[in-house]
Image 1: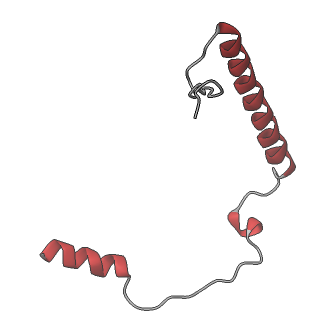
Image 2: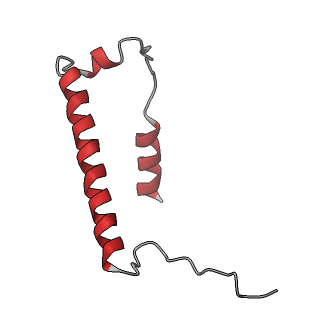
Length: 80
């Protein structure tokens, strides 16, 4: 097999030239602005929702009984 058609790919973070560096930084800044704008829009639409109860109003509440497993495990690790 000949190595004439093998192209070495540039690893992320390693720029071959300044133009690529400028383009990647610009793309990163543009994506950051887009995400921030979407988050701001989402928060603006849902600003009236103040509590988690309104966000999960269809959830079912589960009542647990007995001692917490965290407390049980914590007691065992302290005595060991």
